[in-house]
Amino acid sequence: MDLEEADILLVEDNPTDAELTMRALKRKNLANQVVWVKDGAEALDFIFATGQFAHRNVENFPKLILLDLRMPKIDGLEVLQRIKADERTNRIPVVVLTSSQEDRDIVESYKLGVNSYVSKPVEFDDFIEAVSTLGFYWMLINNPPND
Image (cartoon, rainbow, N blue to C red; front, top):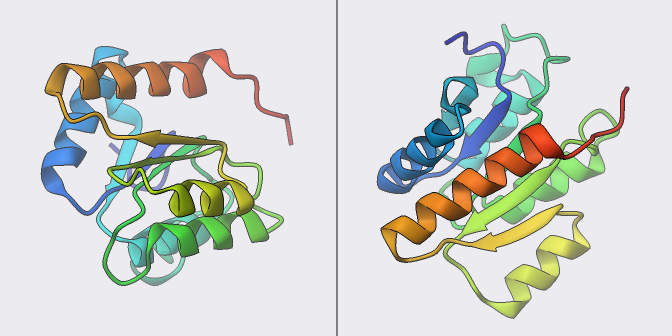
């Protein structure tokens, strides 16, 4: 897969959760369109074509961002804030996919403009079903605005 473009940007520091997410997306034939980055700094570099992704065409934005909250370097709330504050990226659907069920994380995510907040199910089958449904909805059912 070309790391220049991604339909789905997966921002997840836990390799096991990333693998499960990719497996779930594969069930809906969406996995070969995924770029996985391991922290918030890499996510911002990818989205805004800076750092290790400076060679990327900045106009090739992902169609969906799956964003964990608890990550090293830059946490998910700051990534969300930067995406939604930038005119170029504020319409990209962002789904927080996290283990946090804390009210303050949910409230803050929605204040910052998240499109959906999903707590990661603990059970394997439930996790796979939740992520595959998310991917299917945001990539195939939802109608985003045309630029």
